[in-house]
Length: 338
Image (cartoon, rainbow, N blue to C red; front, side, top):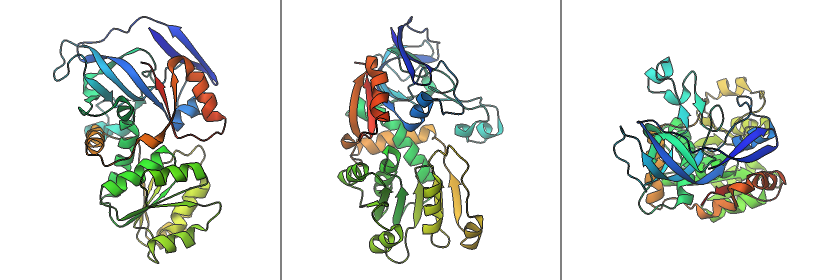
C-alpha cells in the first residue's frame, strides 16, 4: 500500500509498505479523506515542538471499514467511520478523572505516533465512530475540527448572546457556526484575510470584520451594542489576538483560548484581575464531542462545503503543502485517497 511519510521539514516521500496488521480490538480502515490543519503545517515546516521525524501524518480523517478485529462489536465491513486520534495511558490523574484528552503522556496520531496518511490504517475500535447514514466522506473528515469547536464552546459553559471569534480560519469559522447552532444570538469573526471573512459570511456567520481596515472596538459597538460580546474565543494564537480578546472583554466575561501559541505571549494579568475575567484553555476534544459533531452535521446545522477549497491525491501531498505555503487563498485542503 501507499504511505506518505514526512522524512523531515519540507520533505514528503510516498513509499510502498505492507498493509498493517490489526489487533483483535482494532478495525482496519481504508483511508478515504484526510484534512490538513495548521498543526500539520507546523510539522511540515519543522516548527512543531512535540513531533520528531519520520512521521506519518493524518488525524482529520474519514474512511471505510475494511476488516473487523475478532473482539470488536458494533462495526461491519463497509461502514464509513472517523476516529479520535488520541493515544492515552488510562492511569494518570487526568485519565482517571474523566480528562483523558489532557493525559499526562498524551500522544496524537500523526504527531507523536503515526497517523492515517496511507491506504490502510489500524484504528482502535474505541476511538472509532460511525458516520451518519447521509454524511459524505468530506463531512467525515471535518468531524475532528468540528469536535475542536464543540469542546471549546463546552469549556465556556452555556452559549448565548453575542459571541466574538478572533480568527476566521477553519477552526474560527466552525466555532462561530457551532455557536449559532448552540443558541448564540449573533456571532462576529475577525481576521485580516478578506477571503476567509467572505467564506465566513458564506457559511452564515453573522458579522465578519477585517481588523486591518476596521477598528475592532467600533465594530463591536456597531454589531453587539455597548455591552459587547458575552463570550470571546481566540482561534489564532498570536500576541495581537490575545491582546484583542482581553481588551474587548467586558467585566466578568469568559475568554476561551483555542489558538496554538508558538511563542509565550505577554498577558495583561492586571486587566484580567480588575475585570474578573475568566480565561480558559481548550485542548482537543473527547469522544462525546465527536458524537455531537456527527449529530450536528446530520441535523444540517452547519454549512461545510465552502470550507473545502482544494483537493489533492495522496501523491500530491507535497504539492498540497506548497499550495498552503504559497500564500494563496485557501481554507481546508483535503487529500483524497480514493
